[in-house]
Length: 334
Image (cartoon, rainbow, N blue to C red; front, side, top):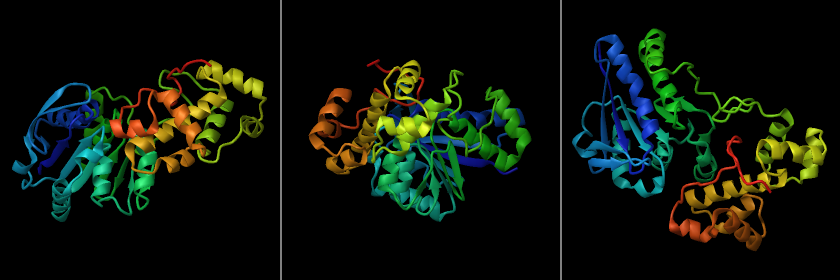
């Protein structure tokens, strides 16, 4: 039986959990099969130890020593600041593998690496939800979706986290059928396989099991659809059929914020994503996030994140310490 060979290329501060979540089902499949149906190796641009975002270090080989091996899949795993790893050397490697018929994959912000190399043009792709807006702005020739993972011909993109396990199981299923995929899923205690079309943030139920009131979900959906052309809270109340007083009470119960503050914060989150992940002019970022008044935008941005938009861009792709979504994450009550 032909062995499926894949190479995982990691970059500084990659997500260790997502990377190992992808690899482990293949380990389980080999063990359960009693034979090596899958073979993999870990590489980086320079080799040696590469530190993950959680502080763990992975021992890797220099990609130059592995580039000419007959890989079936090359997967890039990246997290913070993907723009720091772009370059003609990496792009040349990726295009070389494509020319040899190799499948390419990406976890988390690895999607940026494939997109910048021009290897996702005209295709569907995904990434972690906090990077969706930046991808839409930077690569209009790619259909960006908020799915868990996407298989588009010989390209695979995955949002990261536990979805990497679903991605691996789908690949095992494609190559060896449902029986082995089911056995591998059970072995790693992945009790429910999720299709790629599953959304990263399901609306009906939160991860800890709480169900969010329908009108709150409807109001949030309206807010998320109108980040640039902002609706007033009375307009939102009218569309969901509830009084402003009732909506305020429900929001404070669920997200511990008023509707107005929640709406402001998700627009600021969008602005921060565009500031730290693109080179879009700050004035355009403000407008795209519903803050046409630049001085007001800078003031409330600093109030929320502790530094101005310009400082945030210059000081370098600061990880998000605050998120308005997922909704189970608590914010300050105001």
